[in-house]
Length: 79
Image 1 (cartoon, rainbow, N blue to C red):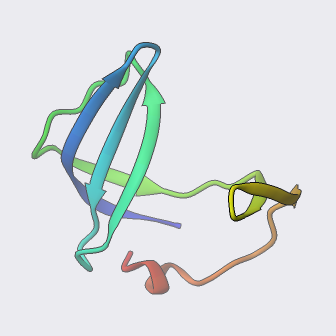
Image 2: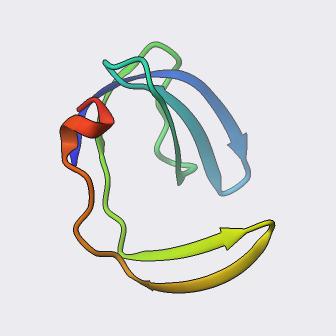
């Protein structure tokens, strides 16, 4: 999946930056990037999703993990 987004917040956490990004659909997604990847609030960014592994949590407890399978179409994420 890929599309465009707008950085609406950035928090520095040592070795990582945590970003809040608004998609054209107005949905909000979150991203964690290495600290040397610096985007400012208001910067347009390309958004893509690559999920090599999925971990399922329920009530704070990991229930299982495995390789990611094909998922929803990009349009379902507003991309």
